Image 1 (cartoon, rainbow, N blue to C red):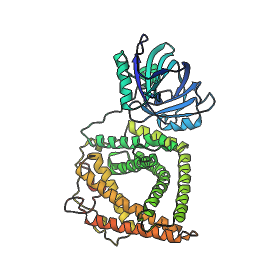
Image 2 (image 1 turned 120 degrees about the vertical axis):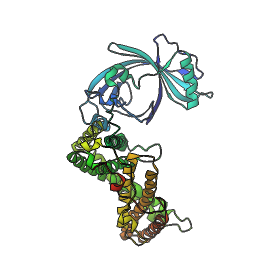
Image 3 (image 1 turned 90 degrees about the vertical axis):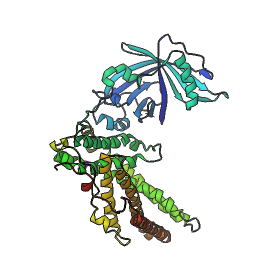
Image 4 (image 1 turned 180 degrees about the horizontal axis):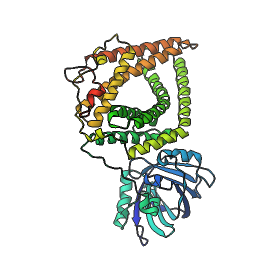
Length: 475
């Protein structure tokens, strides 16, 4: 679940103002034991893992979302002692497999109030905490729940009474002090190509590691996308960037990291492909309301795909609980901290060029095999990533993104067509499988016609190769 709260720092003598709809509840004493690595990797990443006496589910992990005050909160019931394995793996992208130990015990004397509307309905909670941990003591107030308008009224009342917006993301960070502050990434020389390469690598690493916990939890993303998809994109994109900028990076390091990213991408790919097929089945089957398909047959195919996705996700999660995966996470963390650049990275980066088009793109026709179209899609994707590394919002990057979207639809339709056909041998599914296959081939023809008549780069059609997009001076 998402925890959305506002924190306020207040003096010990602070008097809670009169707030309409504030209803007191029973006070309680809380004792929370926090666990982290010896160098506080969780705290520095904005995460916590604790055991709190008295809670129905005493073990809790809180993970950052990128939005201040909003965190993922995952709790479970387990005996006191060592942190449960499920939660240890949940934070492994942050701990990078390092051992967890007790880092703080925090006691809170909490007074809790319901926040209610005019009809007496509870819309949120206000907690007034007096906190002690060793020699550290302070008082803070938290508001959780409610809409912007509801919250703003309470917030204004608190600030008017002398409260200040909280200076710390959590009690733990306040207790631990400077050692728990986020680490800063080294800034590369912006004059050389190394700055572009470093940012591209760090962007890819963040995309992979930030979605690790959500893949484990099966949590959807706010925009309707999935963590599996975004983590897979992160792997593919980073592998592509490492290949594009190979001349600027340590060769052995690049080879090892690309190989391990490929392993992870394959695990993610199996789950993502099933995910895409399930969504595509619904769309394709309902494409023509005047020509409905056999509902039972479609349901049978959907059930088979659901089972395929479940097995792929289980395989993925097993893979993400191995020493091999921990080693990859450690390698990614190290890559983000220090990208192993060669001397060539000190030279300036030449602007992207589209002077030439690949032979494969220029020879595509309506009759070209699916494999040839797929090869052009791979080249387009690689070129887009390279162009975005140099100028993320440039015209070239936008044109390549449009091409990739169109060719991606082609590839999805081609893969789906073969999958639907494979169900033709199942009893009672032959007709439906054949009709699904025909609709996908029709979609492929539409995509090809659009691609062959669209001018992506002015008067010319085609895609530049990655080598033509990014060239390093004096390479």
